[in-house]
Image 1 (spheres, rainbow, N blue to C red):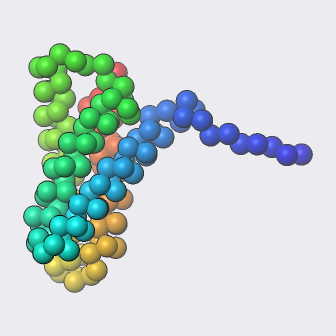
Image 2 (image 1 turned 180 degrees about the vertical axis):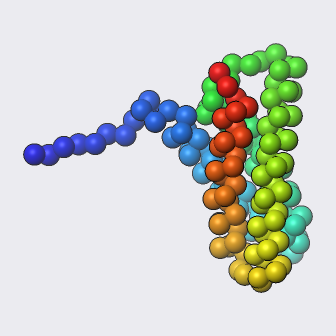
Image 3 (image 1 turned 60 degrees about the horizontal axis):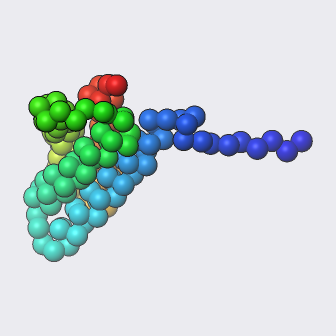
Length: 135
């Protein structure tokens, strides 16, 4: 008997959309981090720049694609943006701590440290975003 398993976006909803957007956000963050560090920018500043740009992208994508937030009133959007950046700021602290331990204390290679770091950050960010963009 041949059984077909179908995975549809409707079945997995926000989690599947979050994984896609999170993958794009992570790719942007990692690409910016490595581009900047290869250009000679210190890891801390490269990470901060990558964080700002990827969080701006993530806010728009999470608001519209993942959580389908219908909020359009400027004050409400500003409140969401401030909350989003504040919560992502908490994950930036974890991000920076992991990079500091991995790169500075352990002197590990940047790519594996950044990838481990991003797994932790994705989990934290999903939990934070889910609370922020309640329908």
